[in-house]
Structures are given as structure tokens and as C-alpha cells.
Length: 133
Picture 1 (cartoon, one colour):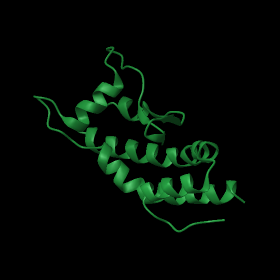
Picture 2: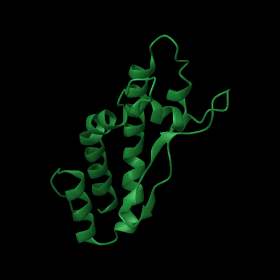
Picture 3: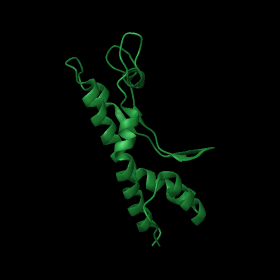
């Protein structure tokens, strides 16, 4: 069983049509999450490496376990923990991505998603083919 490579929304609809999405989705998301995690780390490294960054934000980026809400299945890739001053790394990621009054925005989240989307879809399709055979 297989299907053609398509956008993520079409991919999710195809899974729904086949049924058992609750069975397949976590495995597919777990397979693709490291790709997005790696790309987000790469984007953060490029944007934050202006001579003052220690690499702590980059190293704090981790993929969480897949979950499900009213919108469907998801996996979060975000910064965890706090730095040595007690500032939450996720807060620093938001400041980097959206900017502040004193800091220009350096978008990292959207570029990471866009540049890893096709690779993630390929990985999820390969995993789908494995689990549905």
C-alpha cells in the first residue's frame, strides 16, 4: 500500500481516509521529528551566532512526544529548560524569532519548517509504507 508524495494536509487526509490514524500518526511523527529538530537547530545557529551566542539555545532544542488535540496529531520541536541566568530557552527562541523592542526579528521557525517539509514528508511516507505492509 502506498500513495503519492503530497503536501502535509493531503497526507493527513489520506491517513484519515485509510483509518487507524491514531495507530500510524505517532510513528510517522517520531520518524520525521529529528529532521525538523536538526533544521531548527541549524536556523538558530545561523541567526544567533553573532559573536555573543554560546550555543546553549541551539542545544536546548528538542522534539517532544507526539500528541493529539482537536486539530489532529502533532509533534512539537522547541527549546527546553533555562540558561544559567534563569531565562527560559523557549522565551529566547521567541525573542529571536519575533524580535523585541530592542532586537530585530530573525525568523527561524518558518524557514526551518519550509526547508525541512519535503524531507519530513518523504520520511513519513517511507515510515507509512513500512507500517502498512
